[in-house]
Length: 525
Image (cartoon, rainbow, N blue to C red; front, side, top):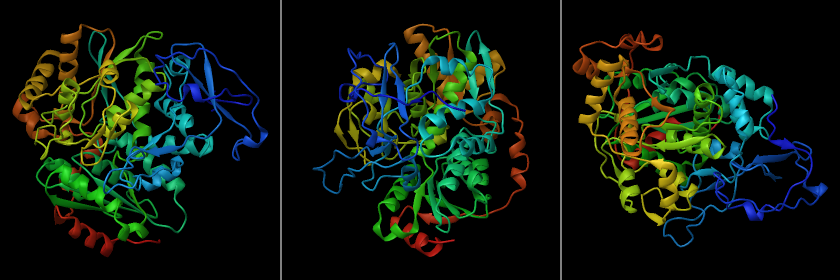
């Protein structure tokens, strides 16, 4: 499958367009096309020149280089404790490194932009075709199409239902994978990419912090994968019983660590490990959404969903329940690739640092984070906020310090965020079930309620999609209490109550984690 992002030929001077946002509000007034120096030929592709179609214009521009990835901290020259990573890396390097050496997050220097006809052509096509379109746009110069096809066909062997609620308001159900969570979409593709890129004989050690579903999805995706070991940290008192059961019983090359603390503690422990020189030889990498390898697969389902539901080139509103912001970032990148997105709605639970920032222009992280029903969203400082800031011209570091403020006006043009209380979450679960016989769990209820608030404030919009990110059966106590029913277990969870396994118990202490990792991890197979 060849994506028409590449063409032999000529390219214009890129400097006038380097700063154009992917929505291309700024127009390219003119474009001269000098001949390309033959010495610029790509060693992989015989002078393949990427064509980026500028959204909302008929013009095109070209990029003669491969996609490269930079650190969100690269400009922090005068910040104590941070040595900015000024280099750029390939996708493979970004994937295997997980996080930049300066604790920044890797991001592509350019976003491949596609004509809307490429998205329209996916109508009625299987999910794997949307995945190929996105994968080739980002990875065609690093993996051959045949390898990408094998990875994608193996990763996505489960349904992606679109449930109509009323009119043209839909639920995108991302809860049908092996661990009944949206995290399956990213974790399964990421595991296969890491396996494809791993240097033979060199062991990869994946370190993951989870607030609920990430750990089980990553563990399942990597379970039994040769040459890769996984360590999952989760907050002991902030995961549901069934989530804990999933994490503790994966086994084989996957070990769960139960941390006496909150998710932010787990996340900070992981980030400290990545920047610890004494662990440099252990080939640590991340499967959290700090790794761009987790973000890339999350672009796909927005494009797939729009293609199935949109009429011609109409825009859609997407509501994405948001915790660490990786899922919503997939939608932001899809829009920048050319997908007609009217608004990205990012409802949070009572961890409301982002909606307050959009309202006031002042960012203050929440520490400690607040424990809410939608436990996977209990995040007081979302890791992927650094990428959102960077996309809109700002910088925020791992600790939540803002070094330069993004363009909040542009952010508010494309993004709306609102905090949903636990009380509202419960009422939404009950009301939506009673009125439409649609079953939501707490995270999906936050997404749906956020969409309702948005539409009430700004008026109705024809095509709206809200994401359901976990299966209701993961929250049987809440569903039973609110609705008086027992949600049926999906096939992948039928035997969960019979599984056995124990985690490693640990304090939220980095010295303790470092000692454990040095004792357990291997450097070579």
